[in-house]
Amino acid sequence: MNDLSHSRLSRIPATIVTGFLGAGKTTLIRHILASAGGRRLALIINEFGDIGVDGDILKGCGEVDCAEDSIIELANGCICCTVADDFLPAIERLLALDPPPEHIIIETSGLALPKPLVKAFDWPGVRARLTVDGVIAVVDGAAVADGRFVDDPEKLALQRQADPSIDHDNPLEEVFEDQLLCADLIVLNKIDLIAAPEQARIASDIKALLPRATKVIASQQGRIDARVLLGLGAAAEDDVSNRRSHHDEEAEHDHDDFESLIMEVDAIDEAAPFIRRLEAVAEAHDVLRIKGFVEARGKPMRLLVQGVGNRFQHSFDRPWESGEARCGRLVIIGKKGLDAAAIKRMLER
Image (tube, rainbow, N blue to C red; front, side):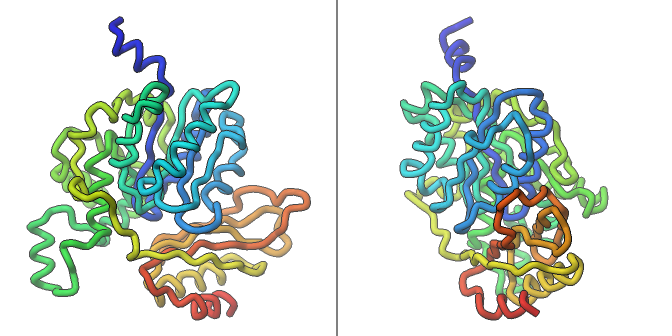
């Protein structure tokens, strides 16, 4: 075994899970935890917003392979913009655990560009201890089928001619493409919401965008075994120059197109009317993403709510803990200018 191979084997592998808002990253990670097979995992979760909804969801999964002190939430902004201030201290904290984790999973925010994060693994203090096992991009197949992203520039140009409101410099599309271009594995999620021919078309369009061979695998609700997702051995920090990005010539990128609101929600009687109110909010205010949890009166378990656009899912994820305040909280993410007062009124009806 040469020195380089020995160095890679001695480093802790890390998997970066990226994807647009609501693609299903958190659900995917829950399935990884459930199929980890006793491997000690640690999580770094990059929240968009001021409350740790994703972290709370993952902490409530009850998996012994990922203890609560191995879950770190970074809520101070996009991880790719705050590498030195947030990411590196989080890595140091995980490496100080006794015993240290056997694998680290990093869930980026929906707005993060993965390439700057991969570059951070080439820093001397990180490179000696960690390697990027792989970058996994989770794609919301249903959203792509609805035409939210157009990866072919020629098709985009035709759409611009038909609709002058479409801008080919839309940062949403650039973020989406940058996540795909950096990926070692692409998960086409929510295939239960799209027909088989549409699945094949989307997978073909994604592959046409990529300059290198990258596997695209289909998924329903992120149900993919850890054995498929972990152990890719990509060492992505060694070929970061081959992972193209729209922002290669820029020192930083701008996320000012988005904002998030945090809403406290009173207990509800029934889930269905509440979901209808959320659907109305998403429709009326052009909301991209809603996630959080609420109390359902008379139920011992917390109701988890997740929505992309006006498509919502809900389930009871865990019992309320003894002494825990049963307060409902939602993060609502949308374009700049969300009307907090109007949204609050709609939720209180």
